[in-house]
Image (cartoon, rainbow, N blue to C red; front, side, top):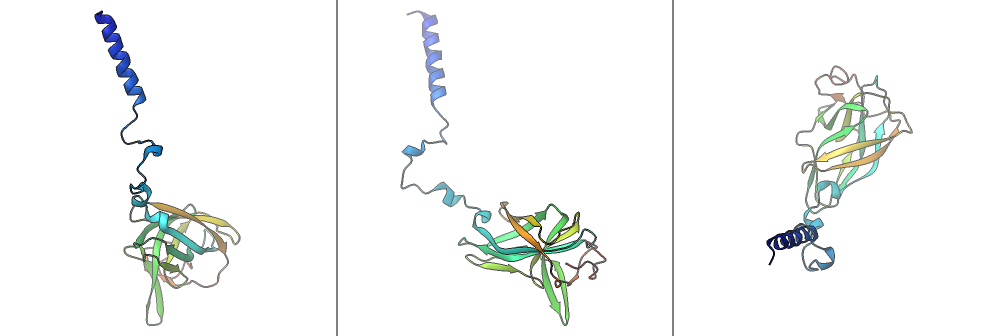
Amino acid sequence: MNPTRTWAATALLAFALTACGGPATSPDPSTADADAPSPSADAATAADAFAVTDPWVKAATADDGMTAVFGEITNGSDAEVTIVAASHDAADTVELHEVVTEGADSTMREKNGGFVVPAGGGLPLEPGADHIMLMDLTRDLEPGDETTVTVEFSDGSTAEFTAPVKEYAGANEEYEGDGHGGDGHGDGDH
């Protein structure tokens, strides 16, 4: 046998096997075991279980400095999820807020630990209660506008929703803050 032909045949066979064999982690779906657990069931994220009903944003100007996002957050999973952050293209700073009442005074502040949404349950975002605070506004949010809010969960997943901007006279709690949108004592209504 000719050693050059043997080497060439071996090289050709090795190339053919390498080119035809895909990675071991990409099985052909037509040959998958029907009884094997679905990878998507194990890979579900908090964002997959997230929904928001009747979202809206209080109209505000950039000069107002701040406003808020409201609606009903729902969690369709069988485990609690936590929203740890949010972002909006018209706000340099976005915080998750709660309102605490001491005597006759209501003060809003950043909510430590974020918004925990119970398994199969909901969390209302309402004026005078939990809400997403848009601060250091970079542009006006006018009634009739549609605007997008992004929320981030403790597992690192994110979800977006669109909310209409509405005129609203309430939601004027004082802010227990560090100078965002005023002196921290109610100058910037939300």
